[in-house]
Image (cartoon, rainbow, N blue to C red; front, top):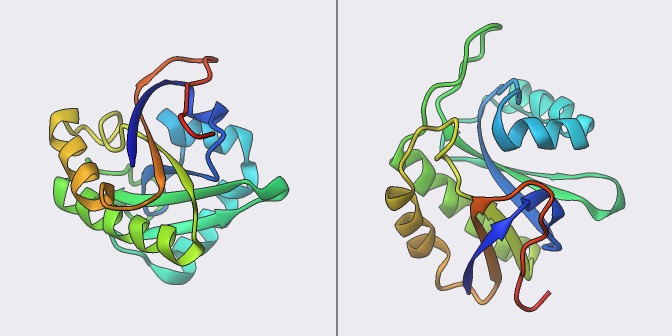
Length: 163
């Protein structure tokens, strides 16, 4: 079930947090920057994974850190493999494919709750009214609580039903 919530996704009680990035993203903007600051190993491990696997937009990667922290990086933006290349903008096709990959991970890992930002609408540059229908289409049939943080409020814990 999809629940739109307002608050700080970093305070979520969901089993896993998902976010949008590009391959080799420097993680120096938006939610990726906050995740990088809270979990420096995420950034290092993500870059290692990118160099090993050369992922394409539309893929997703699950990171597991200390204390059962889990983060799924959704490749919603074009990215470069050369140093200094800034990530490109997101596309609805990439977001749709990344959400499909997210759904597969949710099912394989048997997650019961996932926190998702207004993915690809910040740095990615997409409009929320284009992204929300993709989320509903790809994840709406799951019997899992999906907490979509449609409005960010720093330091405010969202009311997440069932948690």
